[in-house]
Image 1: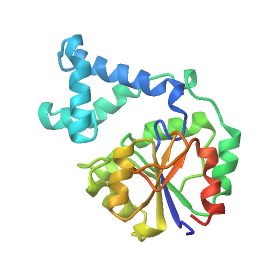
Image 2: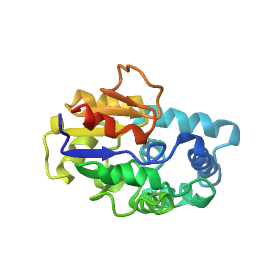
Image 3: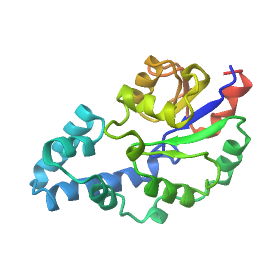
Length: 213
């Protein structure tokens, strides 16, 4: 099958999880909980994880239960030196540029963070648009409504002609239930019940087109 649109997750998808960046962002989330909301350090991690599991992102839980301002939170948690963790990837750029489909970023982060990541990875100009947390508010992945919003932003393509690539099985499961084709990236090669395809790295993406999807 020839996919006409590919939705790419951002964090831990367009860069390898072993980079350590997401760990740094997680530490900033913990710091936000302690400094801005007064949680004791020993409970911050548990609160963060509980909200993440229950609401899709820690942010959504903080908005619901603590009235947190989205922009203040995002600016705080993404205030990290990306150059310490990410570097340009010429091979990935070449692979993505070769894919004959519309390419969009679909992320629970904001556009500012996404652009910084793309700049640091050397992937600027490859994506048609960035569908960020503001574009899908008040929803977030893996809520079904977030995928519907993403399709609207993309011009309402048939989800059956779309491929969604993410590093989280719960996201690929949710998208698959709505008719998307899905690929789980940075996962061990093999068969997964959570996605249609498994990609050990994004450099393996061309084989899906060589196989006809």
